[in-house]
Length: 252
Length: 252
Image (cartoon, rainbow over all chains, first blue to last red; front, side):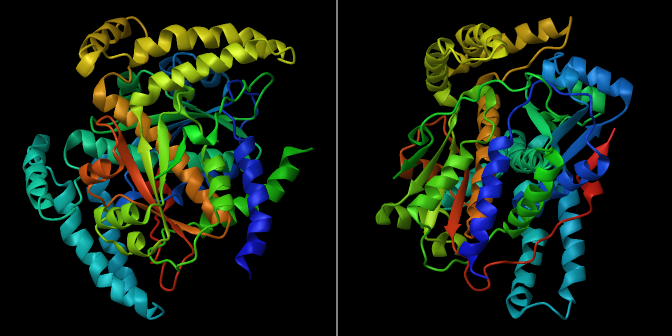
C-alpha cells in the first residue's frame, strides 16, 4: 500500500488524539476499565527505550489507603484529588542489570530462530556483544559510583582523537538518562488514554522523598511524574498556551 | 458524540501508528517535505510542557557542512549517516525566564477576552500569580546556582510539617526537569513522523560537548537526543525486543 494513502487515514486521527490530550485538572468519578488501562500500558511499552534496557516502571496505585496518602503527597492538587487513578511513573537506572540479563536471554532464544532474515542474522552477534561488553562498561560504576570520574576521564582522553559517547556515567547522568526513556513511555501512555476518550494530567507537584517512602522505592529511583487519569469533569480544562513554532524549532 | 464511538475510530489508528514507529537505522535518500516536518513539529508542540515554560527546542540541521560534522559527532552510526534529516532535541532549563515572560504577556492579553468562561476567569488571577511569584522563586538560583542549597533546606524544613514540592533546585535538578519536558515533545514528534509514513531513530550515541560546540549551545543546554528522520531503507529495522507488561507495570 502507498504510504501516502496510510497517512491520509492516520494523520487526521493522530492530530485529533493529540489535540484532545489536555492536562485535565478535574475528573468525574467514573473509573477507566482495566482492559483499557492495560491496552494503554501496552502502547506505553512501545515507546523507544534507551539501549533496550527498560529502566522504567509505572505503578498504578489502587490500595485505597495508599491512594489517599498519595493524594496528600501530591499536595492535594485538584487533579490528584478528583482523578480515580493515579499512576506513578518511575525512572529506574538501577534496573540496567535486569534489562541486560533480559536482553541476553532473549538474544539467546532468538539466535536459533530459522525464520530470521540474513540482515538480522548478521546483526545478532554484534548485538550480543553490545550487551556482554559495552553495556556493563558504560553502566557499571562500582559502589557509590566511584568509577564514574575515571570513566569520564578515559572517554575525555579518547575524545581528543575522535568523537565518542560520553556516558551516562555517575548517578546524575544515569538518572537523567533513565528519566528521558521513562518520559517517552509517559507520553505514549497519555496519548493512548486520550485515544480511548479518557484524560490525564502529568503532575510534578509532589513531595518526592515522601512519595518514594510511600511506595518503598530505592534511593536510585527517580519519580518522573504522577499521572492522574480518568474521565474529564466539569471545568476540567484550563486554556492551553502554546506559542509560535519559531520559539521551539530552529534551522541551522 | 459518544466518546466510545470516537475511541472505536481513533484507537486502531493510534495503535497502527505506534506499532509502525520503529527505530530505523537505514534510510533512503528521499527527504521529508518541509510541510510534513512542520506539521510534525506542530504536533510536538502539543505535548505537555512543565509549568508551560517551554524549556526545549529542536534544531533541524540543514547546512550541508554542519550536517556532515553532525554525522561525525554522532559517531558515524548508520542512522546518522543515511538519514536525510538530523534533528537535535535540546533541553534548555535556562530559557525559563523567556517562558515566564511569554506566559505573563499572554495572560495579560487573554485576561480581557470577553468570551472567557467563568471558570477560566476565576483561574486567571491565580495563574498570573504563579508566574509572578512561584516560578521565579522555584527557578531563580542566583549566579552559579548558589541559592539552590538554601532553597532545598527551606523546603526540607517546611516538609517537616506537610508535603511540599521539592524543586527543581540547582543545575542537575533543573536539567532533569527540562529533559523530561523535552522528551515528551520528542515522542510526539516521532509518532507524528510515523503517522506520515516516514521514520525516525532516537540516538543517544553522540559526543555531547562536541555537539554543543557545533551548534553554539550554552553550557546549561542539555542534548536530549538526536533524531534521525527520513524514509526507511532496506534492512532499516532490526528486531524489536519488548517484554511482558509485568516488567513495566505494577499495582500497589
